[in-house]
Length: 102
Image (tube, rainbow, N blue to C red; front, side):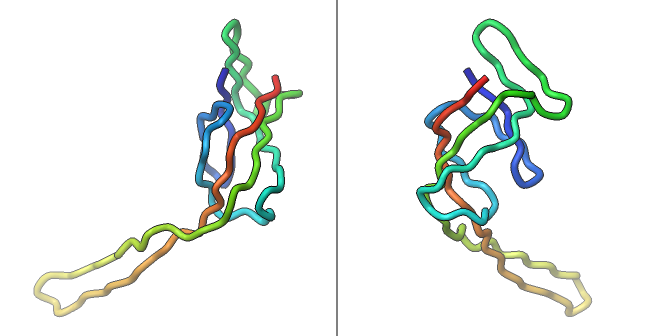
């Protein structure tokens, strides 16, 4: 059984026990959150939501918060003596999928 959930403008395919990195959430570690379910697939049938599946819930446990590795953004315009260097680190929340209810 798997589900497709939406969080932060992105869609994720999840199963029980999966560990995912979401954009930073306002939730304490070891707390539980519920996610919007767009599609759920049992072994027998598939339910597609319009936009979400009614009665379906995906519960997840917040493990911790963190920051990703630095990504360097370097722009250079040749022959113009123009360049720009910037760095970026993504804030994330690590969650574990605990239960999928159909």
